[in-house]
Structure formats: structure tokens, C-alpha cells
Amino acid sequence: MSNRVLLGAVAYDSKVVTIWDGFRQWFRDRDLDFDYVLYSHYERQIEDLVEGHIDVAWHSPLAWVRTVRLARARSVGVRAVVMRDSDRDLVSAVLVRADSDLASLDDLRGRSVATGAIDSPQAHLLPLSMLREAGLRPDVDFKVSRFDVRVGLHGDHVGGERDAAVALRSGLVDAACMLDANTLLFSREGTLPAGSVRVLAKTEPFDHCTMAVGPGADKSTVDRFTALLLGMAYDDPTVRPLFDLEGLKQWLPARTDRYSALERAVDELGFLDAEGKLCADDYRP
Image: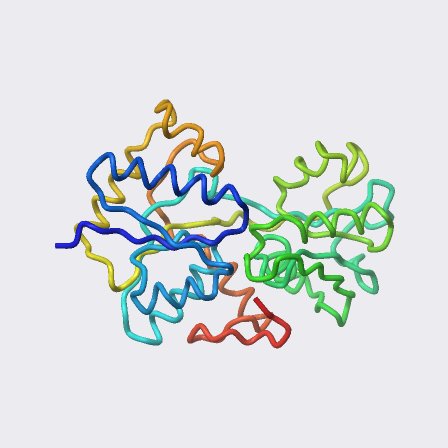
């Protein structure tokens, strides 16, 4: 039995090193040989997990969806084990300026809508899918102004959403899509001054990141890794600063039944095929 867990994580920010260095030492203090490797984008991490080059991967929701499709196509098994408490039941919003004449999604016909990066579930894929369900075809019934910042990070970097917010504030577009929680961030930092925007519509709740386990991982070792994660306590002075950086108060068991809206979105927008192949011609991670 291997006592090693090799994790993949995407380096969307310099704090990622601090976080996983801290967790590495915490696990080693408990006699688990834990280490990690960093990736510059999710697609390589996904493929390495399915190929068995790493044992587990800290995945975005889009990375999980692609992992499941790749694994199914190759007849190998993958599973999800934990997620942050903050990953559950998120929503995205379509915002308009407070003085806008827009009152419903149908009013967006002939108008312009800003989104985050092409691979952002919360600021591009899910909001555009919601608009399609409302009968509005992207770049047919309304113009999409996409802000591709740090493509390949699946929207983990908020730069695309921030640029969409600036475009809305500046009057360059009529609406903007973003994670609802980020409207508070953008208000605090002055990107969207308080009272300057209002919500036109929100998506259904969805789940965000998850810890995925690949086909090459030793089950009993990953089970111990999972149990240790679930046992981490925010009151632990070693753990607390790492949790604050990672944005959680508690690890929770993973649930995989809240990604169906994203599954529909990647199909509708032609981002992935059924076997997990990347199909968007203008996606360059």
C-alpha cells in the first residue's frame, strides 16, 4: 500500500504555494506523505489526473465536468471526495446599471452583454446558458463582449469579471455577468460603487470546486487523506490561516449532483464534446 498522495493544483495566484506548502507540512506531521505539483492551467491537470500521473486534483467545476467525460471515454473511474463549505450553492448574476431601462432578460435583445473569460463557469458559461433558456441566442439576439483574462484558469482569476464590471460602469455594455458574491467585492473596492447597479436575473444555485481522485490513486491512502481533510478544524492555529487564504471554514463531503447546469452549458456553447474533447476554437489555455 502506498502512503503517498500527490495532488495537482492550479497556480492562479501566488498564495497557492503558501496554502499547499502549509497543508503539506500539516499532513506530514500526521505521517501522510503528501506532496503537490502546480499547473499553469486546468487542462493539463485534468489530463494528468485521468492518466494517473497525479493521485488527486483540486478542481474547478469545469475541470470536474471534463474529467468525468474523459474518464468515461477511457473507461476509468474517478470520484470526488471533498469540497469547501464555500463551494456550495453559488449563483451568478446579470447586472445592469441602476438607471438602465432594462427590466427583463428579453429586453437584452439587440443589446450588449459583458462576460468573463471563455472558460469561466460563473461569468460566461452558466449566465449565457441561462440567457439561451430565456430564448436569447448569444451573438445573434444580443452581442457578447467577452473579457478573456488568464484563460485556462476557469475563472479562478477574477480579472475577466472585473473588466466586465468596468465595461458596465463605463457604459460600454448594457449588462454584465459575474458571480453574485463578486458584486460585493467589486463594490468594496470601488469598481462598482454602491447603488450603481442592480440585478436583472440570477442563475439557479450551482456548486463550485471539488477534490477529484484519479484512477491511479491508492484507495485506502486517499480515504485517509479524505478523513484528515474532513477532520481539519478552523480553530487549529496552524490550519486557520490556510483556510482563510483558501476561503473556507470547513471541508465538507463532495456532492456531484449540482453540476448539471454546467453540463448543459458546455454542450450548448460547444465548449466540450461528450468525450471531454475541447471544442471551442478560440480557447487557448
